[in-house]
Length: 170
Image 1: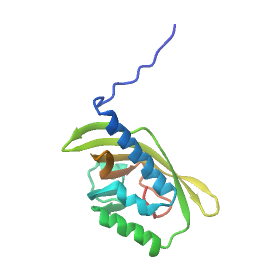
Image 2: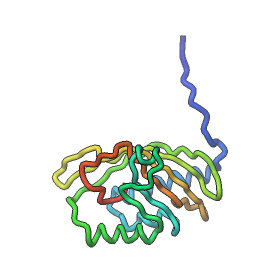
Image 3: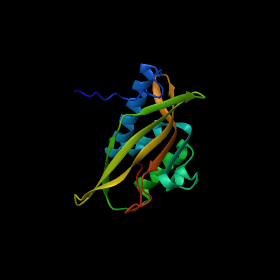
Image 4: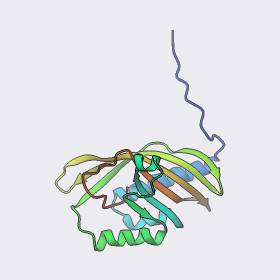
């Protein structure tokens, strides 16, 4: 007897292929900009009026507004990058993201809602590697002229514990 595994139906199968491609490209370019220390590119993945937040799963599920990071416009993201480059003092390290496929959940008010699972491995200057963070991106994405941008990205971390300060974006 053979058994077959049937994938569950997509929540929103009517998303145009061009939109799916633009969203996939956004996700790929976003993590590569961070992982390759091209942080100056990072704010450009967001709309001018945007939200970027890093928050624990527990706080997110309880509706608590406080997180580890909170920026509500692109200027704040640019300031964060400037601070990382010129002011903040932290031990040198890099991230390497592994992301899952993005699930587009719906379309409302001109934006797609989506979620993407991620893990981040952090490598320190001495070569030590650790799983730094795991969780999901909860996004609102707009597409203008074929380019996808984040209107909102809430980084929901599975754990509320971090072994060091989150110095660079996830």
